Image (tube, rainbow, N blue to C red; front, side, top):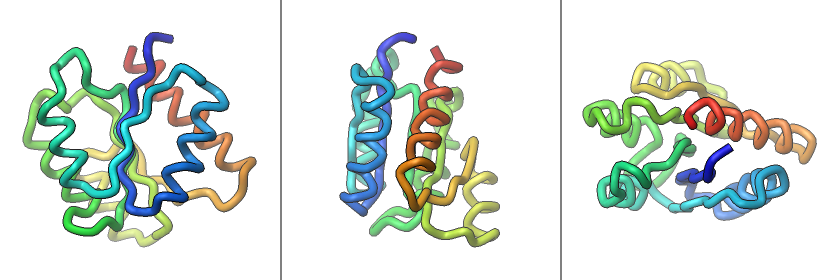
Length: 134
C-alpha cells in the first residue's frame, strides 16, 4: 500500500483521536489530517495539490458551521474529488441523514462504534478504501 493520507473532520476531539489511534495501530505510516469543522477541511482540500489529495475523506455528520453532508455537497460540485471515497461517521442513525449523505456522494454512512473491537474493524474497513484507491 502506498502512503496512506486521510482527511478527517469531526468536532468531537475524542472521536477523532480514537479513530486515529485505531488506524495507526494497523497502518503506523498513515498520515491523518484532522479538522474540527467542515470549513477547515474544505480549505485544506482546496489548497492541496492534486498529487497530495487524501485517499479517503472521513466526515462527521453533525459539525458546527458546515455539516458533513454540506461538505459532501461542495465536493460533489468539484471534479477533482470525484474519485476519493467519502465516509460519513455519525452518532445518528437517522434514515434522513444517511439518505442525504449518500445522495451528496458519500460512499458509506457508518454509525460510530461504541467499543474498541468494533473500532478496530472500522479502522480496517476505512484503510481498505485507501488500498482500493491506490
